[in-house]
Length: 300
Ligand code: GDP
Image (cartoon, rainbow, N blue to C red; front, side):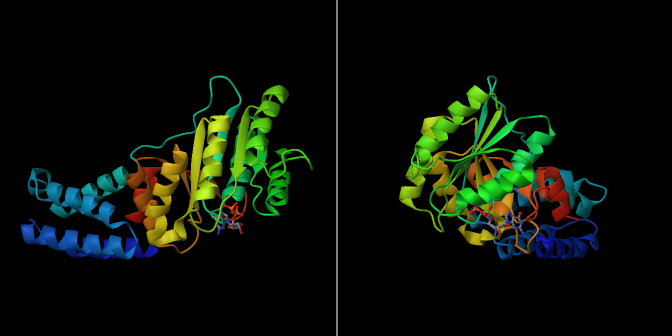
């Protein structure tokens, strides 16, 4: 995973300098925390998250657990690891399935974030686990979005519910509502609803997504965000949280050379867990997100 490459190197360098010391003075700790702070900011992590993170690391690094440790430098690395896991959401969160099927999963996010691709990935992985998913094309904004979902559905071997000409065309709320009814009748146990995205956060789009949410009352609303988005991550995530109150986050394009700031900001800023990571264009390039594994990758 190319993401975090630079951050990892910077942190490794910082810890290497620390390891040459025995006992750590307050100045050593401050110097280290300053370097960590710079490395995180350069990786596009949001300032509020960096401040909170470095504040906690500093407080713990100056405390007894480091002072009394046999290997103080090692102990500081351990603290950074633990605090990284915390800002990445603590423990892994899995999809929650409805007690009474179908489970409804709605996807929201900016255009190009990777929603349609993710819909296919989720559908394929759920089908592999024995579920019977139905994909729903409620992105009626882009002319070829429905076709794109159909292509993805074919690849995943999962059927796609799309508006019939003359019935619901142009009305994504109706399409989503009808699709859920259809899924109940035909005994599909998971409904994955792809929604429209625009290049920037947009009031009309957000209202449409909110209306779909209200109409179908999903069990999960997944906010899909491109890891390359950098400093815009926070504003975008907050806008979607206000608009659709998502239950979880999916990070896409973690295979790229993004600096990783979005990953390290979004869970902590919104208090919503990162549930999946998307790592390529293929439908199998997809994995559940584990905060502890991601922290280890960063500190490798
Ligand atoms: P949507 O507008 O949110 O539905 O986004 P799409 O699913 O159409 O994805 C936009 C582009 O990003 C497409 O070219 C996808 O193939 C690509 N894409 C999606 N997810 C990933 C990913 O995890 N890694 C990479 N490298 N490309 C991705």
